[in-house]
Image (cartoon, rainbow, N blue to C red; front, side):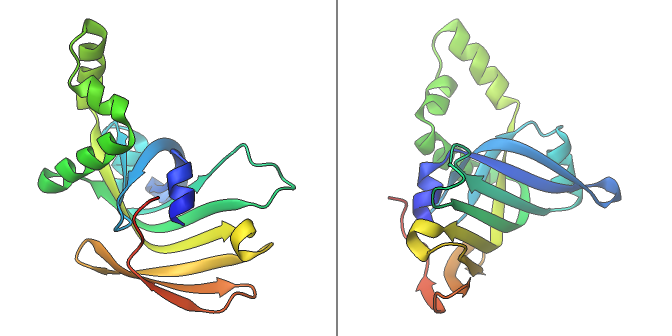
Length: 182
């Protein structure tokens, strides 16, 4: 799973709009070893307002350039999302800046263009996604059409364990905490 997270920068985010209508958008994401995912967004956007009213969300992460006949690879994540505040917002900013160095450079901007970009970025907010279930397709690793499903067990806001089970032929296994991204 960490290979897929590391190899991809964009995700699709599904939220629930009023009237139980689906809404989807894309965003750049960063992640922590504790499987906290962060994205930066306009707090007035529909998906941000959806999360304020209904925190249920799902996310997909995959390389859209994959060829249909090559082994597939991607992740589906299910859980809850919310706007970050305080310490959580600072953690999100550090995590995001580590993944996207140009973000950190723009925030420290010295040129007029960088200061303008920084002002735009500061009008956005970080959102945290805490998956409680993941579904991984990595056909090169697990075989064709095998989805490995995991339940994320948390203590507080940190992933304590990821309990894997599969839909296919791979046996059930358990891993304690997610490995650091490689």
